[in-house]
Length: 244
Ligand SMILES: C[S@@+](CC[C@H](N)C(=O)[O-])C[C@H]1O[C@@H](n2cnc3c(N)ncnc32)[C@H](O)[C@@H]1O
Image 1 (spheres, protein in one colour):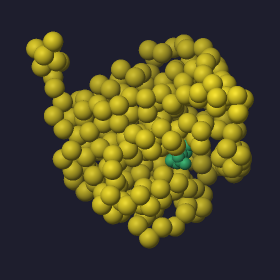
Image 2 (tube, helix red, strand yellow):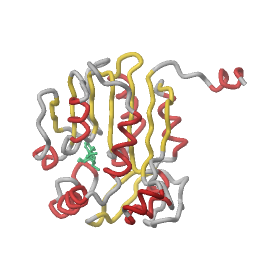
Image 3 (tube, rainbow, N blue to C red):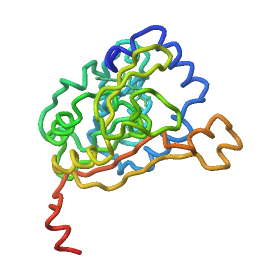
């Protein structure tokens, strides 16, 4: 089941919503604060949220002063439960084909959705077209250390170089994700004209683990990769070596 179908599967959705409701996932403790800290000021910005789910990120950005947020998701069920906000417009679309007018956004954000996208290169190319000059693209995704093994394993990095489709069991069997190396993610962004501002791997502190022991596993390997990039001149490899 690929990402655009998964979140409409009743068995999956039940497990996922329960995880989010109990706060036992990584979202509340790690991912949401890290993403918030990496975002540029959004006052007056035109924002696009890719894989918005029930709209948590989109609403937070609207409340932080974004002029408008276009929040896109493939799942009918997630959008049906999405939190309404006067400056958030929800749209059902598959990120594989979504297209928007050129230079129509100042910030494109995505929270834990891009590991479901098969053609990352094509999506980044479209994001670069949608963004105005100096626009920002900030996203989190499942960490490549997690997506690497062909056979899911909690703490074993394997098959790292073999990019592409992975199948996992997560509440249901046959959840399809796509593995890419960090090197590929960075190279694709640079090829499409992005300058890298930040790479982060949100991890629990020992104090968080003491208070919430279920987070301990995430000190053994990083669950999330966060990338913040800005559209603009990217120096070529030659320019980098000239500067050294
Ligand atoms: C882990 S959830 C994250 C939801 C939300 N961003 C959040 O942080 O609460 C991943 C979301 O990506 C959406 N998604 C996955 N593949 C997609 C695709 N190809 N096109 C559009 N949305 C997709 C799912 O429907 C789901 O809502």
